[in-house]
Length: 161
Image (cartoon, rainbow, N blue to C red; front, top):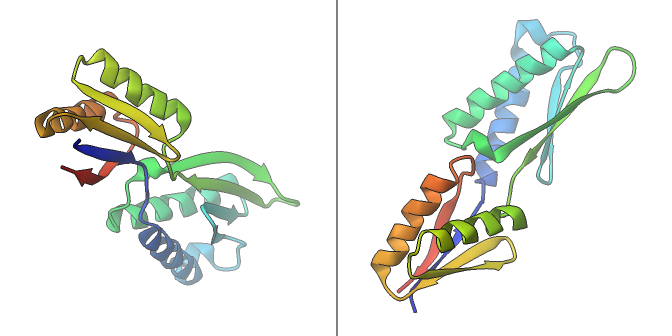
């Protein structure tokens, strides 16, 4: 029975490269000289540091530009709130999305059921496996999922015929 997996995976190599480029640019830019502006990547979290909200926003802008140049979809990044960390310094944690959440998986399943296509969706951990009798139905399901869930940078892999 033909099937495919709907996944939500960022290219972490490109994310890491973008963070390293931002760190290098922070070290060389004149407006960041003598400040505590910094960026670091741990697991699937990017932490931005700065002296003020304005500087934090500048670091975020540089990061978004680098991610866009490295063709990483910006919808993978979830912004956290700005926290004070003593004195005038602030930090912000950005989470890199990885894996389809159960809520999003349920939305995918509901969209497939409402479409009356002859396909079934099953949540399997961080992915949603969609299976059907015909390849054409699966391709229509891919188009439907892309159209229904525009806020998620979903990709499809493991297509089996």
